Image (cartoon, rainbow, N blue to C red; front, side):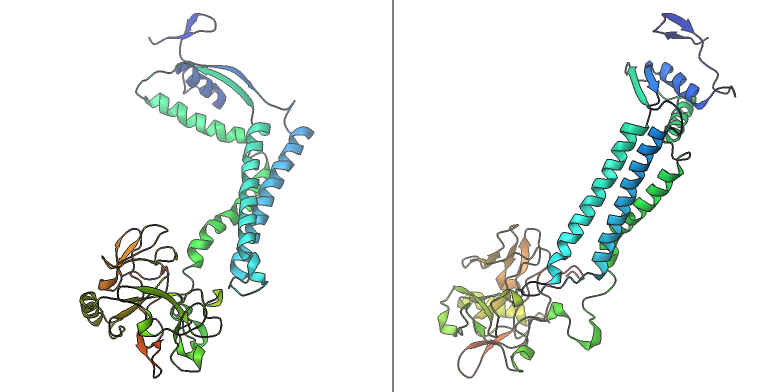
Length: 370
């Protein structure tokens, strides 16, 4: 016969019959504790009795925290869906888009955290237990005890006998569940490649679009707006150029900075062969000159460190490297998509111009992969 020893009294006793219908759930929990050499020193409610004024007061405070979390979650959802978000120069309503999302979500999670902590600290009974750790295989009775312990813990949470908290948790956490799904689902609602009203997708529309220059090819200019001639860039050299339109070098056209590179003759031959064999970049080079977007396709940083000996373009943020002579193919780092190539030519006055806008999307593009 199996016996256990009650260390508190120094006596041996028989284990309880778990099938005894007279046993309460807490009796089974205590039996499981004894079998696992756990002594429950203290287990008492924090209140004088059930449904006291003090308990109701704590219950209302916790319910308020969960309801506040739900309200803040709804604020996040409303702002995420309807608040103006597109960037504009000057003081705009869109300036508050990101702060509203961050503040509402942060306060919602803070309210949930305080609600859970308050529930554990102020509503659950106080328990002090001492256990001697040991290793043993789990028996069927051990599993029964574990299951009953879990159910007893749920009972002690008091959700069933506290309908106010039950409703507050449901109303408070439901919006937060939607908040977690909103960024995932929201980005899939509308493809940026299919804009409304027949307009050109903004992902394919930069400052080099001829429509912004009365239908004329847009010149490649320096930051001060002066045009660039081929002889202005030495062999093996490079220069950052901007669209030659009003505001072309400002944040209004932050997607347009381009790196113009004058390749050496041998490297230019390799690059031309690669571009002519590519459906997007065919005919994009002019002479030994090539132009690529400076916006890294990984995280949008400026990829501007050019190594003329290796023809590699390095992004300093996360160390992505692009091989210029192979259509700016990524060869190192986290970037998985090549840099878009700007088709260039020379106008009647000898200035370099964009033969067309970019044929591929600028910067990080999460809608398609090579």
